[in-house]
Length: 319
Image (tube, rainbow, N blue to C red; front, side, top):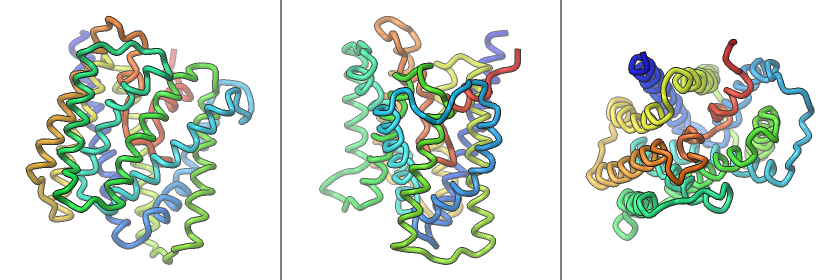
């Protein structure tokens, strides 16, 4: 029975990652016609009614006033940076290269969990982190290719997403999930709305529909991921995020004539191997009191694809 549940959880997670990858393909498609911040603004605007329907189910009483204003402010800033960085990266870089860089987030969660969660990280996980970061350098290959804003944006998104995950884990149940969800949305609207003053291009109706599709795909994938974690063990479900590199390779080849070059393939293999090893070590327990990577359910967060751990707290399972 447990085996069947794990298979179901893994299958649901694979489907969720396929939808997330499709979400990112639409971002890249619109990014070829419009500024990345404009795409983020309109897709966020389209997601707002859907998110409001979810928020109305929040069983926790209270207001939007945070109990931990400093941490919530930092989570808001990091959430905005994560969303902006990923949208900009997807609009400028090959899909597989972006994912390879974003896959560094679990490595960064492991590092950040030491000062923020008091997590004890042993030699094995430290070695996995170092090897994984070497894999990031292999993907970036500084000195042999020109590093542009897309690479910096992807790195910023990975760092910000990891920081966000650890902050949410630190706050635990002391902060309403509504607060942790809404403040980044408001910050995103202000930041991306202000960017429209600098660069705005009128959007055609079909492209506005695609912005709405981004919103729908992100939320559907988030709920599929919730179902996956409820069905299977976290240590089984978590590594399914790396299947996005397969979707990226296929989508990149079909829609954007992208090919997976050798440095990206080698670097991605190193990063994914390190990430899976860290998940495996956390799944075994030992010194890992918080299991920060498994608990964080890493996926590059955007306003259109909010962190599934927050959605789950708003949408608890039926008794």
